[in-house]
Each structure stands twice: as C-alpha cells, then as structure tokens.
View 1 (cartoon, helix red, strand yellow):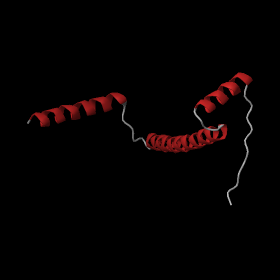
View 2 (cartoon, one colour):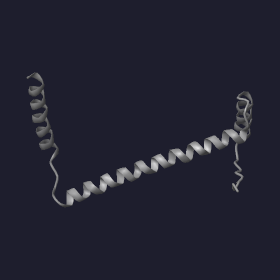
View 3 (cartoon, helix red, strand yellow):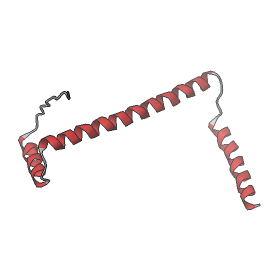
View 4 (cartoon, helix red, strand yellow):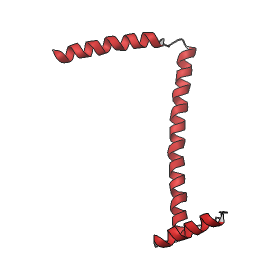
Length: 94
C-alpha cells in the first residue's frame, strides 16, 4: 500500500492568490503542481549530492597528492603543456 502524506505550507495571501490563478489557468490542481515541484526538487538534490561527493573525492585526492609531494607548480604545468601544445601543432601540420 502506498503511504500518503500531507504537506502544509504557509504563503502570504498575494502569493497564494497568484498561485491559485496560475494553477487555474493551467487547468491543473494545486496538489499536482506541488507534487511535481517536490519531485523536481528531490531529483535536483540527488544530482547535487552526487556532484558534491565527486568534488569531495577530487579534493581528497588532491590533498593526498600534496601530502605525498606529488604536485607540479602552476608555472611548470603551464610550461609543460605549452610544450605539448607545440608538439601537437607540429604533428598536425605534418
């Protein structure tokens, strides 16, 4: 059996009136609009949570590399990739 829950929200009177008018003009119900909004919010939070986990893992890996001394200075990295770009350009001209 599907469990149902009720959600009560407080809106100022103008917003509630505007919402009721928008729902009426869309020929739907307030409940349906709110269900869709809640579902969308939950899905966006799942995606955001996954992204936060991805970033946290990247930061942790960066910190491990830093602690192990496995880092390259920004100037050195730029120089290395400038050399790689130059080699790639030469190879593409051949």
